Image (cartoon, rainbow, N blue to C red; front, side, top):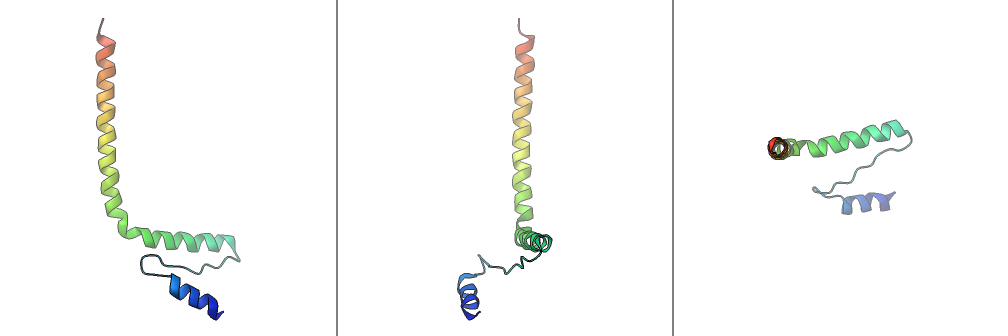
Length: 77
């Protein structure tokens, strides 16, 4: 048991933490992993939201240009 504790202590860092997840019940394992992921990623939510909003605006602009070109080419003789 001491070897496991030492390995976890040496390998787990602030930027790459290790978690001990019980695996004797799959639903509980999945819940514990999900909660750890949510708590780890939550601080980045605003940054991702800004990036997704910018990408959405760019895709909408591309779609608008595409539709304009399609309309323009359809009205030409």
